[in-house]
Length: 114
Image 1 (cartoon, rainbow, N blue to C red):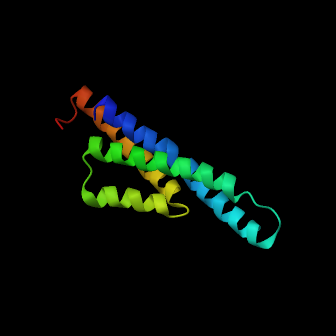
Image 2: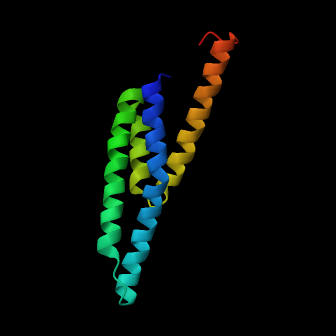
C-alpha cells in the first residue's frame, strides 16, 4: 500500500467515529426538540452535515485509491447512513491498516513475496 492510499484510508477512519457521534447527538436533539423547549437541531444539523460531507469525500477518495470492489465501497457508504455505522467503519478500517502494516513488514523482511 502506498503512502497516498494509506493517508486516504486514515482520513476516512478519523472522520468516521465523529460522524457517527454527531449523528447520534443529532437524533437526541431531535427527540429533545419534540419533547422539551430545547432546540439544538440547527446547530447539530450543521455540524453533522459537515462531517457527513467530509465522510463522503474521504470515502470517494479511499475508494479510488484503494481500488475497492463495488461491494466494499457500498458497505462503507452504508456505514455512513447508519446511526452507529461510523464506529463499525472505523474498526474495520483500523484492522485493514494493521493488516497492511503487517504485510509490508513481512515483505520487507523477506518472509513473503506478496
